[in-house]
Image (tube, rainbow, N blue to C red; front, side, top):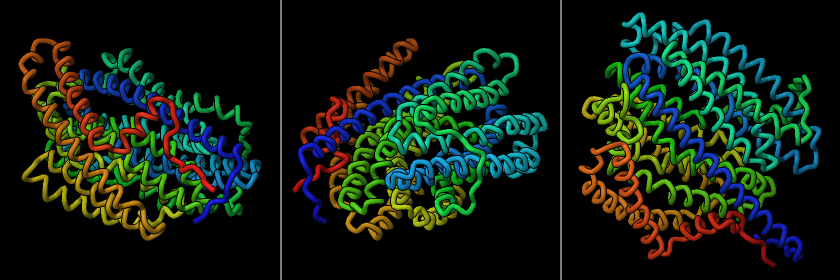
Length: 540
């Protein structure tokens, strides 16, 4: 499709906007990376205080349903359905109507989600009985999980409010504060662990999550006031845009919640293994999420408003290019982490977790689960970008078809793989489902927008895999040589892991340079604060 010529001033505006988004991507990535590092500190403290023993598994079981509701009806689901519609109203210069829509959505969230939370708090004991015989067999753990769940449930209401606020900020391309608030959420939890873990044990973790969530909401209100938004107690069910958001949320709740649905299935099977498997998978999943939060979510977040705008204006060439660039960038930055988790999982787990109640046996079990998680890591992260694409097209019901298949597939694979592979079978199932989901979404996207630059994506990923193999060989060789030295002390262990991963990273970058990977050039431009090619320049 031919794009009209623009003036010099307009070209400058496009270039400036590209620089702004590129710099925003840097800030979001750094802030998210900082949050993940502090999150690791939180996990280190948690592992040291509670290990993988019964109370920690009870906490994991107690958090499943609150996390599931949060994913389906709060935070991400609300903002994902809200951003395209809110952006559409802003593009039509209907700011007051957009703000009225936001107020209606906040009111509905408090009423509907608040009611659900109240019901679930009442039936918590019944819900916990569904998640495994090991928990019910211990009255102490059962009571612990029940009380913990009732502390966590109210956070869902707070996060629903945060989801609407984040949607407003994203629509105005204000990414920094939403990226920073998880840092303070983690700091809130750490503070409670340090202050109260010795006295109230696992409850310190639950109350820390509650306090951190309140802090998160308060911080989000600061930039919101600068945009002139004021909440009004309205609930306009007849507003077609309100109905549009609700209709968009229905498929998004399932599509975005697929990891949580599958996590629920995984936890049911984990409890059938033993009373430690749930905690082992939980610790491995935290490491699995590290590159996802640092890179995949950051890239998807920054590109989401652009994808929504291109879709609204029917600029499909730009839409496809942006989607392709985002997907390839996610694979490029994810594959090194996936490779490290495959070739030296025990080294990473031991460095991060092994202390206090977290012993060598726990390290081996968590590393084993992490290695199987790593197989599907790139696909899981790529799914984030593809889902953003469907949300931008305001057609989130299409991934729903794949999601339903995934649920059944995950349960079947858990059952089949759990017996021969133990806890690794459950995480391997998640990896296989992530790969199936990625190719399913890619097929559906091609049917919607035509060619999705698939050949270019495949060619780039194949070359990235070649680079990743070289990275794996270099890191494994370095770790093998330094393994004995790593046993001397924590500092020596840190130096050995950094040397092993660092040598692999150097090999990866050099190989990418030799193979002339475009994604390396784009990443370098981003680091140098130059414009990232996420919006092709308009030409006459």
